Structure formats: structure tokens, C-alpha cells
Length: 85
Image (spheres, rainbow, N blue to C red):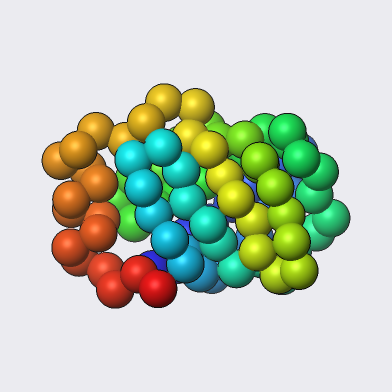
């Protein structure tokens, strides 16, 4: 699944989601420099501008925590409609 991430006027598209949970996600990152605790907006297919915080970054991966956990039905829709991993 590919998402879009925005922060401070910058936007990156085509970001690959490697793992997804109700609380957050891990993405493959090849974008601008980021900092832990930086706030971003992540847009999933049919789900836009979901506020999240960067918890960690390592090599080409980022761990994001959603401001509010995904509703289980939304999570199931995303997880079943797209191959993650």
C-alpha cells in the first residue's frame, strides 16, 4: 500500500507501508530529514489527513503513531484490501 505524508509544507507521495496496526504504522522512507516526535499527516487510500507522530527512524524506515487509533472496521478495510509487508 502506498501513502502520502505531509509535514511543514513538504509532501512525499508513494511511501510504502511495511506494517500497519490500529495504533500506527511503519513505512519505508526516502524523503526529507525527520525528527522523532515530529507531527505529520498521513493519507491512506480513501482516508486522508490522519494526524500522526514520528516515534522513531532507522535507516530507511519510520515508525508512526496515529493521534487516534484506527477504527477496527477501517483497519480491516485497509489490511484486507492491500498486501502489507
